[in-house]
Image (cartoon, rainbow, N blue to C red):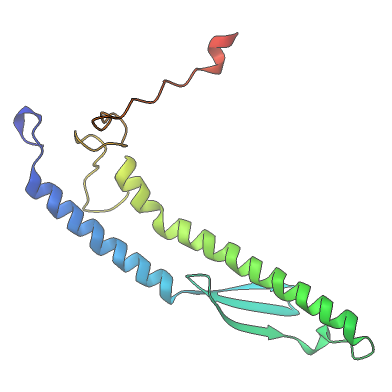
Length: 149
């Protein structure tokens, strides 16, 4: 910020460009990532990409019981769903881990190297300490449960 509390627009534009570049890089990294989920002690393995799309599925021969095809079909279907859900859970964790610095950089904490903490800049509605947008009402203050005692 410049003296007098004025926002340095050049600094803001540079920070936004740096953040956009880092965000695009993180999104590309996620798109290229592949994670596995398993079920049935490894009888079924599902591989999904960073966007949650199923890219590979393997079913071990031990999962197939030739004596009871109907039961086997249902069991395999259940294992496939469980393995896919396990892989999706792993993707969710990867996405949160990869994108967390961006949330921290916007809301305080300066999570991105080279990008200043924008939470104290005036005129950024929605960030802590920022005024409401014109025509919006400030949200009511949260009551402290300790005050009720």
